[in-house]
Structure formats: structure tokens, C-alpha cells
Length: 182
Image 1 (cartoon, one colour):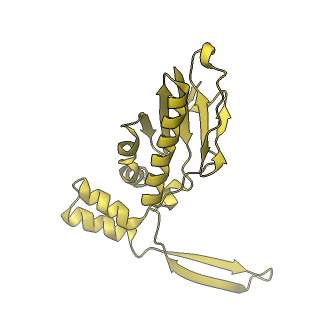
Image 2 (cartoon, rainbow, N blue to C red):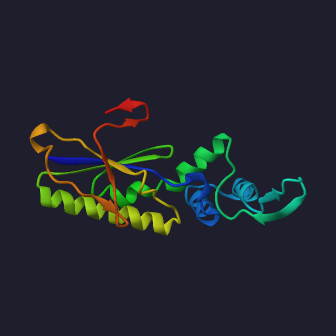
Image 3 (cartoon, rainbow, N blue to C red):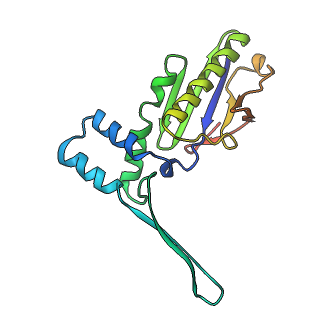
């Protein structure tokens, strides 16, 4: 059995959530009426300012811009909204293999009894992952996304070059994942 796990790293996960998509998903999951209006007020028309000062502490540049992506961080709501935002991610993959999610950690287990089929399924999983990220205007950080072989010794020497968006995924021998060591 050929088995590898993909440990996905979402680039700036809370900063990339599209407000329209998030509100659509909240509505889809049953949030309506005054509560949905509250979430709109919570997300919309927030402004962020940047001020640059010279060495003499004079104002050099200052501007306020409306924040169009992301959720305010620092409360329980940022994790809750993030989980709602990515909740449909497994639907893209579960027909192919197994997806596990916890907070901003997404892991996908890919397996097959034949090596050629394993590679095909793995690439198909990555294609579905790519489509989900594009559709949901999110970014998978390929530099920090890694794979780990989870297989008996007799299969441990199979060649494995796995890539996402033309970038090789890092293959690790060990990994700390949610406090577990493999």
C-alpha cells in the first residue's frame, strides 16, 4: 500500500477570507435575519490605516483603506468563521481520499495499492485542492505545505516527486502535527 499524507499550510488564512463568500456560507448554513446582519456589520466597512513617519517624527504618509478581505482577529470568532469558510473543503476531496481538518490545519491522506494509481490519485487530489483554493480566493502556501510517507518499510523506497503549482512539495521524515510526533 502506497500512502502519503499532505499537510497543507494556508497562507495568511484569516487575512484572505472573502467577505461575500463568508456571508454566503453563513447563510447557507442557516445564519439568517438579525444575526446575518450583525455579521455583515462585523465584517464590512472596517478601515485600516498605515502611517509612515520620518526620522524627525513628521507625518510622511497616512491613509485609511476599507478592508475587503479577512476577519478581525483576537476573539473566538476568527477561528469559528475560518472553520465555516473552509467547511466545504473536504467535499472536493473526500470522494478521492480522506481529509482531516482542525482549525487552520488541513491534512489529506492519499493511498492506493498500485504505485501508478497512487500518483494519479495524488495529482487528482492536488488538482481539486487547487480548484478549491482558486474558487474560494485562498492561497495554499506550497513552500510550507509538506508530505510524509506513511507506509510499511517494504514500500518506503518508492520514488515520490510531488508538486503543487509547479513547486515541489517538501517531503519530511518526521512531523509535529497538533502536538503529535510522527
